[in-house]
Amino acid sequence: MLQRVVIILVLAVFAGCKSPRFAKGGVFVEDVDRYFNTDLNNSNVWLYMDIRPFDSKETGLKMKQLYPNDKLVMKSVGIHTKGSKLLFSAVPDSEPQYHLIALQHRNGVEKLDGYERKVQDSAFYFQRDITLGRLDIRHIYIPYREDGGLSLIYYISTEKHLDCRFCKVDYLARINALELQKKESDSLRWQITECRDREAKRDVRLEPNLGMFSSDQIAFLKVYLDFENGNVGLQYFQILRPADRDCIEVSLCPGQYYVEYQDSESKVLQRDTVSIRD
Image 1 (cartoon, rainbow, N blue to C red):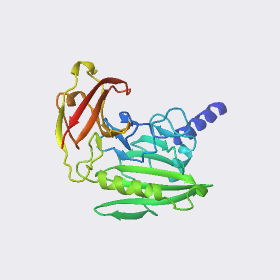
Image 2 (image 1 turned 90 degrees about the vertical axis):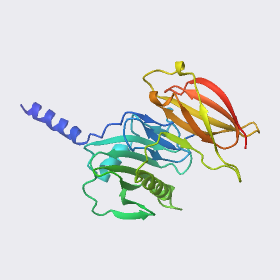
Image 3 (image 1 turned 180 degrees about the horizontal axis):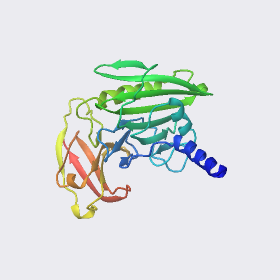
Image 4 (image 1 turned 30 degrees about the vertical axis):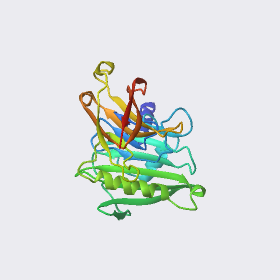
């Protein structure tokens, strides 16, 4: 009987420490500073270019597992995680190496006592700072739906950000609040928007071979600009759902471009070139 009670207590402890599950439908690719999700509405998150897809190193963006201290940090923040989904946990390649956890809440954070309300142009968010040993933690909560929002949990060793405390996450908080609180923030596209002086974008229609795509899987479109010095740079990225492939229209600045169509595992299916004159 005593053994049974002990087992029940142990299970209860582990159940109380259970982390939210990772959301399905997450997409994060090389050279794009934004996380997308094809299953959850309004869950795209702007990041920095030095965050890359995880590839078994000690850095990168994970969409299936946590970093070692993540669970303890989330517990210290004390947010109610019922109805929440983990989007990702990320560490940049460059210094300072901070950690960033993103969660989407189906239900709003119930208690914001002790949080500071920050306003940026037409957007707003809440933030609170916590210390856990030698870790400095900032929890950003961005409400953008009637009953839910986004949490960004940033943590870093104290000695690694003495010059500019929380500068990295402050910028991310502002740009994501501005984007998520718009009425239309669910785009599955990413683009470098500015052309050179006096140049204007041109609308281009792309017509891939539809037979190469899997009928029930997403695909990727990547458009690279040829800089004519031996280098290329990604200018446009789009997640292609099955219904998006018949007519693909993009607006591009004048230049010579390389177009790649990739499957959901980033395997190249087709390459084309496009030339746009001023």
